[in-house]
Length: 487
Image (cartoon, rainbow, N blue to C red; front, side):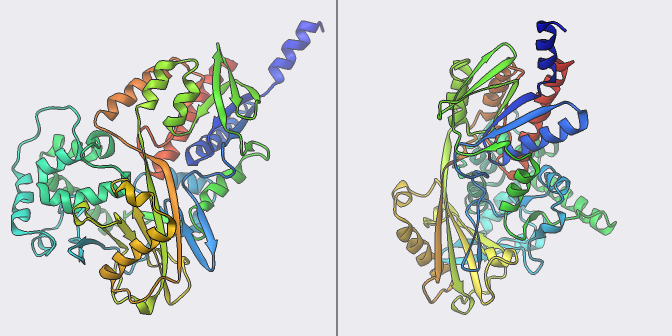
Protein backbone atom coordinates (compact mmCIF):
# COMPACT_ATOMS: atom_id res chain seq x y z
CA UNK A 1 0.00 0.00 0.00
CA UNK A 2 1.41 3.38 -0.99
CA UNK A 3 1.84 6.31 1.39
CA UNK A 4 -1.19 8.12 -0.07
CA UNK A 5 -3.35 4.99 0.21
CA UNK A 6 -2.35 4.66 3.86
CA UNK A 7 -3.13 8.35 4.44
CA UNK A 8 -6.58 8.00 2.84
CA UNK A 9 -7.31 4.84 4.85
CA UNK A 10 -6.31 6.59 8.10
CA UNK A 11 -8.58 9.50 7.20
CA UNK A 12 -11.52 7.16 6.58
CA UNK A 13 -11.01 5.43 9.94
CA UNK A 14 -10.85 8.72 11.82
CA UNK A 15 -14.07 9.42 13.75
CA UNK A 16 -16.20 12.40 12.81
CA UNK A 17 -15.63 15.07 15.44
CA UNK A 18 -18.46 17.35 16.55
CA UNK A 19 -18.01 20.18 19.04
CA UNK A 20 -20.91 21.35 21.19
CA UNK A 21 -20.24 24.79 22.64
CA UNK A 22 -22.16 25.14 25.90
CA UNK A 23 -23.01 22.65 28.63
CA UNK A 24 -26.50 23.85 29.51
CA UNK A 25 -29.65 21.81 28.93
CA UNK A 26 -29.66 22.63 25.19
CA UNK A 27 -26.03 21.65 24.63
CA UNK A 28 -26.28 18.46 26.67
CA UNK A 29 -29.51 17.46 24.90
CA UNK A 30 -27.74 18.00 21.57
CA UNK A 31 -24.76 15.88 22.63
CA UNK A 32 -27.00 13.09 23.91
CA UNK A 33 -29.03 13.07 20.71
CA UNK A 34 -25.83 12.89 18.66
CA UNK A 35 -24.80 9.88 20.72
CA UNK A 36 -28.16 8.20 20.04
CA UNK A 37 -27.96 8.90 16.31
CA UNK A 38 -24.39 7.67 16.10
CA UNK A 39 -25.25 4.38 17.83
CA UNK A 40 -28.25 3.88 15.56
CA UNK A 41 -26.45 4.64 12.30
CA UNK A 42 -23.12 3.02 13.08
CA UNK A 43 -21.25 6.17 12.06
CA UNK A 44 -18.16 6.62 14.21
CA UNK A 45 -18.46 10.03 15.85
CA UNK A 46 -16.70 11.86 18.64
CA UNK A 47 -18.73 14.55 20.39
CA UNK A 48 -16.99 16.99 22.71
CA UNK A 49 -18.91 19.42 24.93
CA UNK A 50 -16.98 22.57 25.83
CA UNK A 51 -18.39 24.39 28.85
CA UNK A 52 -16.90 27.72 29.85
CA UNK A 53 -17.73 27.49 33.55
CA UNK A 54 -16.83 24.88 36.14
CA UNK A 55 -20.27 23.24 36.16
CA UNK A 56 -22.93 21.94 33.79
CA UNK A 57 -26.58 22.90 33.59
CA UNK A 58 -26.62 26.66 33.05
CA UNK A 59 -29.48 28.15 35.07
CA UNK A 60 -30.53 24.68 36.29
CA UNK A 61 -29.01 24.25 39.74
CA UNK A 62 -30.22 22.11 42.63
CA UNK A 63 -28.50 22.39 45.99
CA UNK A 64 -28.98 20.21 49.05
CA UNK A 65 -28.17 21.96 52.32
CA UNK A 66 -29.39 21.61 55.93
CA UNK A 67 -32.03 19.10 54.86
CA UNK A 68 -33.35 21.41 52.13
CA UNK A 69 -33.50 20.87 48.39
CA UNK A 70 -33.18 24.32 46.86
CA UNK A 71 -33.64 25.14 43.20
CA UNK A 72 -31.69 28.15 42.01
CA UNK A 73 -33.38 28.09 38.61
CA UNK A 74 -36.43 26.27 37.22
CA UNK A 75 -37.99 23.79 39.66
CA UNK A 76 -40.06 21.80 37.14
CA UNK A 77 -40.97 21.44 33.50
CA UNK A 78 -44.22 21.36 31.59
CA UNK A 79 -45.42 18.08 30.09
CA UNK A 80 -47.83 19.46 27.49
CA UNK A 81 -44.76 20.02 25.33
CA UNK A 82 -43.43 16.47 24.94
CA UNK A 83 -39.70 16.84 24.37
CA UNK A 84 -38.36 16.98 27.94
CA UNK A 85 -40.60 14.16 29.14
CA UNK A 86 -39.65 12.00 26.15
CA UNK A 87 -35.97 12.61 26.91
CA UNK A 88 -36.48 11.62 30.56
CA UNK A 89 -38.12 8.36 29.51
CA UNK A 90 -35.28 7.56 27.09
CA UNK A 91 -32.78 8.25 29.88
CA UNK A 92 -34.61 5.85 32.22
CA UNK A 93 -35.65 8.56 34.66
CA UNK A 94 -39.33 7.62 34.88
CA UNK A 95 -39.08 6.35 38.47
CA UNK A 96 -37.43 9.61 39.57
CA UNK A 97 -40.16 11.91 38.24
CA UNK A 98 -42.56 13.45 40.74
CA UNK A 99 -45.75 15.40 40.13
CA UNK A 100 -47.18 18.47 41.81
CA UNK A 101 -49.19 17.83 44.95
CA UNK A 102 -52.78 16.74 44.37
CA UNK A 103 -54.07 18.58 47.46
CA UNK A 104 -54.40 22.00 45.83
CA UNK A 105 -53.08 23.35 42.57
CA UNK A 106 -54.71 26.74 42.65
CA UNK A 107 -52.82 29.98 42.21
CA UNK A 108 -53.38 33.21 44.13
CA UNK A 109 -53.01 36.80 42.99
CA UNK A 110 -51.57 39.40 45.35
CA UNK A 111 -54.06 42.25 45.50
CA UNK A 112 -54.03 45.10 48.06
CA UNK A 113 -51.96 43.15 50.60
CA UNK A 114 -54.14 40.04 50.34
CA UNK A 115 -54.01 36.82 48.34
CA UNK A 116 -57.09 36.36 46.17
CA UNK A 117 -57.61 32.98 44.44
CA UNK A 118 -57.43 33.04 40.68
CA UNK A 119 -60.85 31.82 39.45
CA UNK A 120 -60.94 28.10 38.80
CA UNK A 121 -60.45 27.39 35.12
CA UNK A 122 -58.89 30.82 34.48
CA UNK A 123 -55.73 30.67 32.38
CA UNK A 124 -55.13 34.01 30.64
CA UNK A 125 -58.90 33.95 29.95
CA UNK A 126 -61.90 32.41 31.75
CA UNK A 127 -62.98 28.92 30.71
CA UNK A 128 -65.61 28.36 33.43
CA UNK A 129 -68.50 30.77 33.85
CA UNK A 130 -69.53 30.51 37.54
CA UNK A 131 -66.05 30.86 39.15
CA UNK A 132 -65.39 33.83 36.89
CA UNK A 133 -68.68 35.61 37.64
CA UNK A 134 -68.38 35.21 41.43
CA UNK A 135 -64.65 35.92 41.69
CA UNK A 136 -63.80 38.92 43.91
CA UNK A 137 -60.60 39.46 41.93
CA UNK A 138 -62.24 41.41 39.11
CA UNK A 139 -64.59 44.38 39.15
CA UNK A 140 -67.96 44.24 37.40
CA UNK A 141 -66.59 46.50 34.70
CA UNK A 142 -63.59 44.21 34.24
CA UNK A 143 -65.81 41.14 33.91
CA UNK A 144 -68.04 42.82 31.35
CA UNK A 145 -65.02 44.01 29.38
CA UNK A 146 -63.55 40.49 29.28
CA UNK A 147 -66.89 39.14 28.08
CA UNK A 148 -66.70 41.41 25.03
CA UNK A 149 -64.00 39.08 23.71
CA UNK A 150 -66.79 36.76 22.58
CA UNK A 151 -68.17 39.36 20.13
CA UNK A 152 -65.13 41.45 19.18
CA UNK A 153 -63.95 40.99 15.58
CA UNK A 154 -60.64 39.43 14.68
CA UNK A 155 -57.67 41.67 14.07
CA UNK A 156 -57.28 42.20 10.35
CA UNK A 157 -53.50 42.57 10.32
CA UNK A 158 -51.42 39.38 10.41
CA UNK A 159 -48.36 41.23 11.69
CA UNK A 160 -46.78 40.89 15.11
CA UNK A 161 -47.88 42.89 18.14
CA UNK A 162 -46.98 43.09 21.79
CA UNK A 163 -48.51 40.83 24.42
CA UNK A 164 -49.94 43.90 26.14
CA UNK A 165 -51.55 45.18 22.95
CA UNK A 166 -53.02 41.77 22.13
CA UNK A 167 -54.57 40.92 25.50
CA UNK A 168 -55.71 44.46 26.25
CA UNK A 169 -57.43 44.54 22.87
CA UNK A 170 -59.14 41.18 23.44
CA UNK A 171 -59.83 41.17 27.21
CA UNK A 172 -59.30 44.69 28.51
CA UNK A 173 -56.79 46.37 30.80
CA UNK A 174 -57.97 44.79 34.07
CA UNK A 175 -57.46 41.23 32.83
CA UNK A 176 -54.09 42.24 31.47
CA UNK A 177 -52.90 44.00 34.64
CA UNK A 178 -54.09 41.38 37.13
CA UNK A 179 -53.49 38.11 35.24
CA UNK A 180 -51.63 38.34 31.95
CA UNK A 181 -48.83 40.68 33.03
CA UNK A 182 -47.75 38.75 36.16
CA UNK A 183 -48.02 35.35 34.45
CA UNK A 184 -46.05 36.46 31.39
CA UNK A 185 -43.43 38.36 33.39
CA UNK A 186 -42.91 35.28 35.54
CA UNK A 187 -42.22 33.13 32.49
CA UNK A 188 -40.17 35.52 30.36
CA UNK A 189 -38.86 38.07 32.85
CA UNK A 190 -39.88 40.71 30.32
CA UNK A 191 -42.31 43.58 30.10
CA UNK A 192 -45.37 42.51 28.07
CA UNK A 193 -45.30 45.97 26.50
CA UNK A 194 -42.29 44.88 24.44
CA UNK A 195 -42.86 41.11 24.29
CA UNK A 196 -43.90 39.56 20.97
CA UNK A 197 -47.20 37.68 21.20
CA UNK A 198 -46.36 35.61 18.11
CA UNK A 199 -43.05 34.49 19.62
CA UNK A 200 -43.98 34.14 23.30
CA UNK A 201 -47.64 33.07 23.13
CA UNK A 202 -48.32 32.06 19.52
CA UNK A 203 -51.20 29.78 20.52
CA UNK A 204 -53.30 32.78 21.51
CA UNK A 205 -52.68 34.60 18.23
CA UNK A 206 -53.72 31.38 16.49
CA UNK A 207 -56.87 31.17 18.64
CA UNK A 208 -57.93 34.61 17.49
CA UNK A 209 -57.26 33.78 13.85
CA UNK A 210 -59.15 30.49 14.01
CA UNK A 211 -61.96 31.14 16.51
CA UNK A 212 -62.11 34.90 16.90
CA UNK A 213 -62.78 34.68 20.64
CA UNK A 214 -60.09 33.57 23.11
CA UNK A 215 -62.73 32.66 25.67
CA UNK A 216 -64.61 30.41 23.28
CA UNK A 217 -61.40 28.78 22.00
CA UNK A 218 -60.14 28.03 25.51
CA UNK A 219 -63.53 26.71 26.65
CA UNK A 220 -63.60 24.30 23.71
CA UNK A 221 -60.07 23.16 24.53
CA UNK A 222 -61.05 22.62 28.19
CA UNK A 223 -64.14 20.65 27.18
CA UNK A 224 -61.99 18.50 24.91
CA UNK A 225 -59.59 17.74 27.79
CA UNK A 226 -62.47 16.89 30.11
CA UNK A 227 -63.92 14.59 27.47
CA UNK A 228 -60.58 12.82 27.16
CA UNK A 229 -60.48 12.31 30.94
CA UNK A 230 -63.94 10.74 30.98
CA UNK A 231 -62.89 8.35 28.23
CA UNK A 232 -59.77 7.41 30.14
CA UNK A 233 -57.47 9.20 27.71
CA UNK A 234 -56.15 11.73 30.19
CA UNK A 235 -52.51 12.72 30.18
CA UNK A 236 -50.24 10.30 31.99
CA UNK A 237 -48.60 13.03 34.06
CA UNK A 238 -49.67 16.29 35.67
CA UNK A 239 -48.99 19.44 33.72
CA UNK A 240 -45.80 20.09 35.72
CA UNK A 241 -43.28 17.51 36.92
CA UNK A 242 -39.90 17.58 38.63
CA UNK A 243 -37.42 15.07 40.09
CA UNK A 244 -37.15 13.60 43.57
CA UNK A 245 -33.67 15.03 44.01
CA UNK A 246 -34.22 18.21 42.02
CA UNK A 247 -33.88 19.33 38.43
CA UNK A 248 -30.17 18.63 38.63
CA UNK A 249 -31.01 14.94 38.11
CA UNK A 250 -31.74 15.61 34.45
CA UNK A 251 -28.37 17.31 33.96
CA UNK A 252 -26.52 14.53 35.78
CA UNK A 253 -28.30 11.85 33.73
CA UNK A 254 -27.40 13.56 30.46
CA UNK A 255 -23.78 13.95 31.51
CA UNK A 256 -23.57 10.31 32.63
CA UNK A 257 -24.99 9.13 29.30
CA UNK A 258 -21.99 10.55 27.42
CA UNK A 259 -18.61 8.79 27.18
CA UNK A 260 -16.05 9.78 29.78
CA UNK A 261 -13.90 12.63 28.59
CA UNK A 262 -16.47 14.02 26.16
CA UNK A 263 -17.30 16.87 28.55
CA UNK A 264 -14.64 19.50 29.23
CA UNK A 265 -15.31 22.14 31.89
CA UNK A 266 -13.61 25.52 32.23
CA UNK A 267 -13.13 25.66 28.47
CA UNK A 268 -14.62 28.97 27.31
CA UNK A 269 -14.59 29.32 23.53
CA UNK A 270 -13.12 32.55 22.19
CA UNK A 271 -13.72 32.27 18.46
CA UNK A 272 -14.90 29.89 15.76
CA UNK A 273 -13.40 29.76 12.28
CA UNK A 274 -14.45 27.82 9.20
CA UNK A 275 -12.89 26.75 5.94
CA UNK A 276 -15.00 24.64 3.60
CA UNK A 277 -16.37 21.68 5.56
CA UNK A 278 -13.98 22.02 8.49
CA UNK A 279 -14.23 24.07 11.65
CA UNK A 280 -11.65 25.39 14.08
CA UNK A 281 -12.65 26.06 17.68
CA UNK A 282 -10.33 28.45 19.53
CA UNK A 283 -10.57 28.52 23.32
CA UNK A 284 -9.49 31.08 25.89
CA UNK A 285 -6.90 28.52 26.99
CA UNK A 286 -5.11 29.01 23.64
CA UNK A 287 -6.24 25.62 22.39
CA UNK A 288 -7.27 25.00 18.79
CA UNK A 289 -9.65 22.11 18.09
CA UNK A 290 -10.50 20.95 14.58
CA UNK A 291 -14.00 19.63 13.98
CA UNK A 292 -16.29 18.40 11.23
CA UNK A 293 -19.31 20.14 12.73
CA UNK A 294 -20.22 22.49 15.56
CA UNK A 295 -23.37 23.22 17.59
CA UNK A 296 -23.39 26.61 19.30
CA UNK A 297 -25.58 26.29 22.38
CA UNK A 298 -24.71 29.40 24.36
CA UNK A 299 -26.74 32.62 24.80
CA UNK A 300 -26.79 34.75 21.67
CA UNK A 301 -24.95 37.56 23.46
CA UNK A 302 -21.97 35.16 23.50
CA UNK A 303 -22.72 33.32 20.24
CA UNK A 304 -22.58 36.63 18.37
CA UNK A 305 -18.89 37.04 19.20
CA UNK A 306 -18.08 33.45 18.23
CA UNK A 307 -19.45 33.74 14.68
CA UNK A 308 -18.53 37.36 14.06
CA UNK A 309 -15.18 36.42 12.51
CA UNK A 310 -16.67 34.42 9.63
CA UNK A 311 -20.10 36.06 9.36
CA UNK A 312 -20.43 39.57 10.87
CA UNK A 313 -24.04 39.86 9.68
CA UNK A 314 -25.05 36.69 11.54
CA UNK A 315 -23.22 38.03 14.59
CA UNK A 316 -25.17 41.28 14.31
CA UNK A 317 -28.51 39.46 14.08
CA UNK A 318 -27.67 37.34 17.14
CA UNK A 319 -26.57 40.37 19.15
CA UNK A 320 -29.98 42.01 18.60
CA UNK A 321 -31.59 39.51 21.03
CA UNK A 322 -31.30 41.09 24.46
CA UNK A 323 -31.27 39.33 27.84
CA UNK A 324 -32.66 40.07 31.28
CA UNK A 325 -31.61 38.89 34.73
CA UNK A 326 -33.63 37.35 37.53
CA UNK A 327 -33.18 36.70 41.23
CA UNK A 328 -34.56 33.76 43.20
CA UNK A 329 -34.91 34.26 46.96
CA UNK A 330 -35.47 31.04 48.96
CA UNK A 331 -36.79 31.46 52.51
CA UNK A 332 -37.54 28.74 55.08
CA UNK A 333 -40.10 29.25 57.86
CA UNK A 334 -41.60 27.18 60.62
CA UNK A 335 -45.09 26.20 59.49
CA UNK A 336 -46.57 27.33 62.82
CA UNK A 337 -45.33 30.87 62.13
CA UNK A 338 -47.44 31.23 58.96
CA UNK A 339 -51.15 31.93 59.47
CA UNK A 340 -52.15 31.57 55.82
CA UNK A 341 -53.47 28.05 55.00
CA UNK A 342 -51.13 27.88 51.97
CA UNK A 343 -53.82 25.97 50.12
CA UNK A 344 -52.29 26.38 46.70
CA UNK A 345 -48.99 26.21 44.82
CA UNK A 346 -48.13 29.90 45.10
CA UNK A 347 -49.08 33.38 43.97
CA UNK A 348 -48.25 35.95 41.31
CA UNK A 349 -47.84 39.67 41.89
CA UNK A 350 -49.18 42.22 39.39
CA UNK A 351 -46.69 44.97 38.65
CA UNK A 352 -49.29 47.57 39.61
CA UNK A 353 -49.00 46.37 43.23
CA UNK A 354 -45.50 47.83 43.41
CA UNK A 355 -44.01 44.95 45.43
CA UNK A 356 -40.35 43.83 45.27
CA UNK A 357 -41.34 40.33 44.07
CA UNK A 358 -43.10 39.15 40.93
CA UNK A 359 -44.15 35.69 42.14
CA UNK A 360 -43.82 33.19 44.99
CA UNK A 361 -43.96 29.40 44.91
CA UNK A 362 -44.82 27.30 47.97
CA UNK A 363 -41.92 25.04 47.04
CA UNK A 364 -42.10 22.38 49.76
CA UNK A 365 -45.88 22.07 49.37
CA UNK A 366 -45.73 21.98 45.59
CA UNK A 367 -43.25 19.08 45.55
CA UNK A 368 -42.39 16.59 48.27
CA UNK A 369 -38.93 16.25 49.76
CA UNK A 370 -37.96 19.92 49.58
CA UNK A 371 -37.89 20.73 53.31
CA UNK A 372 -38.16 19.00 56.72
CA UNK A 373 -41.62 18.41 58.22
CA UNK A 374 -43.14 21.31 60.15
CA UNK A 375 -41.35 23.83 57.90
CA UNK A 376 -42.24 25.57 54.64
CA UNK A 377 -39.79 26.51 51.90
CA UNK A 378 -40.85 29.49 49.79
CA UNK A 379 -39.28 30.48 46.44
CA UNK A 380 -39.72 34.12 45.51
CA UNK A 381 -38.80 35.73 42.21
CA UNK A 382 -37.54 39.18 41.41
CA UNK A 383 -37.66 39.85 37.68
CA UNK A 384 -36.11 42.54 35.53
CA UNK A 385 -39.21 44.68 35.97
CA UNK A 386 -38.22 45.16 39.62
CA UNK A 387 -36.22 48.38 39.88
CA UNK A 388 -32.48 48.16 39.20
CA UNK A 389 -31.88 49.85 42.54
CA UNK A 390 -33.31 46.79 44.31
CA UNK A 391 -31.43 44.35 42.05
CA UNK A 392 -28.10 45.90 43.02
CA UNK A 393 -28.61 45.39 46.76
CA UNK A 394 -26.79 42.66 48.69
CA UNK A 395 -28.34 39.30 49.60
CA UNK A 396 -29.33 40.25 53.14
CA UNK A 397 -31.21 43.32 51.90
CA UNK A 398 -33.06 41.29 49.27
CA UNK A 399 -33.99 38.57 51.75
CA UNK A 400 -35.23 41.18 54.21
CA UNK A 401 -37.29 43.04 51.59
CA UNK A 402 -38.93 39.81 50.45
CA UNK A 403 -39.58 38.68 54.04
CA UNK A 404 -41.27 41.97 54.91
CA UNK A 405 -43.78 41.61 52.08
CA UNK A 406 -44.37 37.90 52.69
CA UNK A 407 -45.12 38.70 56.33
CA UNK A 408 -48.01 40.90 55.23
CA UNK A 409 -49.35 38.60 52.52
CA UNK A 410 -49.02 35.29 54.40
CA UNK A 411 -49.31 36.41 58.01
CA UNK A 412 -45.76 35.42 58.99
CA UNK A 413 -44.88 36.18 62.61
CA UNK A 414 -41.15 35.38 62.76
CA UNK A 415 -37.94 35.74 60.83
CA UNK A 416 -36.97 33.01 58.34
CA UNK A 417 -34.77 30.27 59.79
CA UNK A 418 -32.85 30.02 56.51
CA UNK A 419 -32.40 32.13 53.38
CA UNK A 420 -30.53 31.81 50.11
CA UNK A 421 -30.35 34.20 47.16
CA UNK A 422 -29.53 33.02 43.65
CA UNK A 423 -28.81 35.55 40.90
CA UNK A 424 -29.24 34.42 37.30
CA UNK A 425 -27.57 37.21 35.36
CA UNK A 426 -28.39 37.79 31.69
CA UNK A 427 -30.21 34.45 31.56
CA UNK A 428 -33.60 35.27 30.08
CA UNK A 429 -33.80 36.13 26.35
CA UNK A 430 -36.25 38.87 25.49
CA UNK A 431 -38.62 37.99 22.64
CA UNK A 432 -39.25 41.55 21.54
CA UNK A 433 -41.92 42.47 18.98
CA UNK A 434 -40.63 41.30 15.61
CA UNK A 435 -38.82 38.30 17.12
CA UNK A 436 -40.18 35.78 14.56
CA UNK A 437 -38.77 37.88 11.71
CA UNK A 438 -35.47 38.21 13.57
CA UNK A 439 -35.22 34.43 13.96
CA UNK A 440 -36.02 33.99 10.27
CA UNK A 441 -33.07 36.26 9.44
CA UNK A 442 -30.79 34.27 11.77
CA UNK A 443 -31.91 30.95 10.26
CA UNK A 444 -31.39 32.23 6.73
CA UNK A 445 -27.79 33.21 7.49
CA UNK A 446 -27.07 30.04 9.50
CA UNK A 447 -28.22 27.87 6.60
CA UNK A 448 -25.21 29.14 4.65
CA UNK A 449 -23.08 26.99 6.99
CA UNK A 450 -24.52 23.44 6.94
CA UNK A 451 -21.84 22.20 9.35
CA UNK A 452 -22.97 24.62 12.05
CA UNK A 453 -26.20 24.67 14.07
CA UNK A 454 -27.56 27.02 16.71
CA UNK A 455 -29.45 25.90 19.82
CA UNK A 456 -30.79 27.41 23.02
CA UNK A 457 -33.65 29.30 24.61
CA UNK A 458 -33.19 32.45 22.52
CA UNK A 459 -34.91 31.15 19.40
CA UNK A 460 -38.23 29.33 19.69
CA UNK A 461 -39.10 28.92 23.37
CA UNK A 462 -37.60 29.52 26.81
CA UNK A 463 -38.85 26.48 28.75
CA UNK A 464 -36.92 23.31 29.43
CA UNK A 465 -38.89 21.28 26.82
CA UNK A 466 -38.15 24.02 24.26
CA UNK A 467 -34.43 23.89 25.10
CA UNK A 468 -34.38 20.10 24.81
CA UNK A 469 -36.16 20.32 21.46
CA UNK A 470 -33.79 23.01 20.22
CA UNK A 471 -30.72 20.95 21.11
CA UNK A 472 -32.09 17.72 19.66
CA UNK A 473 -33.26 19.41 16.46
CA UNK A 474 -29.82 20.97 15.98
CA UNK A 475 -28.20 17.57 16.50
CA UNK A 476 -30.47 15.89 13.97
CA UNK A 477 -29.86 18.54 11.30
CA UNK A 478 -26.11 18.41 11.79
CA UNK A 479 -26.03 14.62 11.81
CA UNK A 480 -27.91 14.45 8.50
CA UNK A 481 -25.36 16.81 6.98
CA UNK A 482 -22.45 14.74 8.26
CA UNK A 483 -24.00 11.50 7.03
CA UNK A 484 -24.39 12.96 3.54
CA UNK A 485 -20.75 14.08 3.51
CA UNK A 486 -19.45 10.76 4.80
CA UNK A 487 -21.08 8.70 2.02
